[in-house]
Image (cartoon, rainbow, N blue to C red; front, side, top):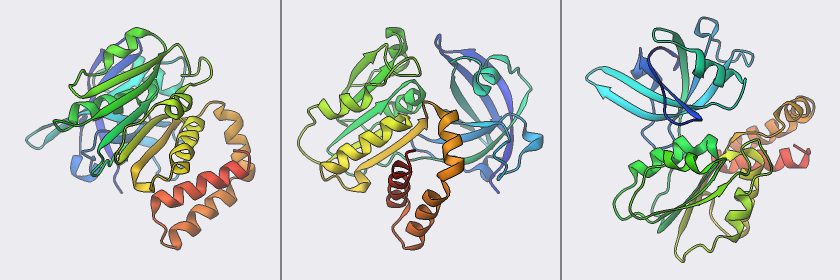
Length: 277
């Protein structure tokens, strides 16, 4: 069990679309937050009802934008994309100092290894993770960030770092229209040498990006590609309820065969695609 309570200690508007919630973590040793730039945690808005296997319990996954340690006390900043009447947006815009939430399922994906260059790909949902990754880059890192935002002002959220080139697409994707992220990845003239791609954005675009690089012969450890959200999620969820069991079985068999989590995730995604998901 890695669940712990946390208390809201500050609320601030960071940009016109990002609301920052600062949380005091009650039991950080139990939660075991990851140090990587895309460190994430599940935030549960009704902690008294928390059950790890209860999918109906209201909660959402968020990047740990900042992790502050002061002696035995630990605080985290969660930057929430405010995008309408969703449960996360409602929480971020209405929560107050002193409110309690639950935290669980701390994890991360970003592992560039010995890459000669890195490609970061994100829409607004992945922007907090991309920003923290950029902040934590070692000196001399060669990085390009392909980012999809709704307005130019959204780009000011990203830190400016030497060696980081930002290539934006403005006014596309993000639930307002078709995404251009996979297209930008396919047409981007990547450098020579060993590359690494991290992706945080819409799930269908993540599949296209993964297939692109795997088609180029990239090894599985050169990719950390994660779907942070899914366009048309209600219809997808309904279809998954009917046809998703086989994909889950494929994933379980891959793990049992010792393929490892990344290859198992690819097998799972391919099974979903075969099922029209």
